[in-house]
Length: 252
Image (cartoon, rainbow, N blue to C red; front, side, top):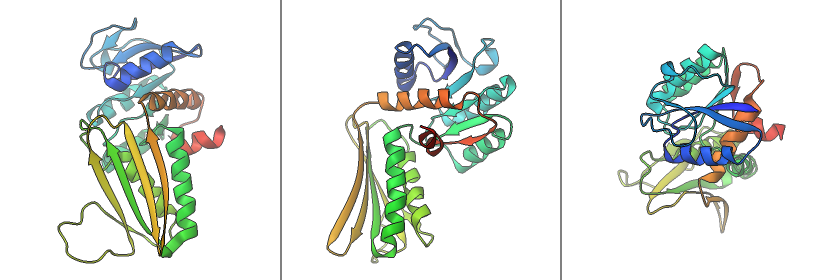
């Protein structure tokens, strides 16, 4: 039985993770971290990692970028893997993860869905085949409570497209400030916020007289929770290093 600590356990995703883990027989939540220390799911909740004395095999972080260093420091002090699912991380945050990955296994993905990981692989392949002949635009849609834009997933998909291109593209997030035609060496990224949209991502390869669209639509947050749990189980027993959904998909 894999023992899991949830950081951000009383948030929306934390509660979803708790429900999904409770329905499984291969893992259990043994503790949680949250600014709201209410314990409603049968496990203790601590306001900071430093106050936790519970033994665990892995930690899943679905909280806030400001908690990242404390989570990684806790994981390093216990010599346990860390699955980082928090969005809105900066380049400095990612560099910090890489530093800690020298000592412990760290799993990070901007999106924990296996379907999105497959979408990224398809986008990488499409970019390598279509090359310079197609313009690439990415449209992402999320609920009206999401604070970061563009989404981490949109940037992940843009990076996947970039990997398949023979040139170094620039990312363009808005066009209203300039009056000029589209540069062929750019990837446009547009963000839409409204209602209760869980997450929708479309990658458009726009050529002469044809458009190829790769899409992923999430119907609920459960798929992200399931992906995070599977990533945690995958990471247990791995050597120190950085891991992502490509590693997980390749191992399936």
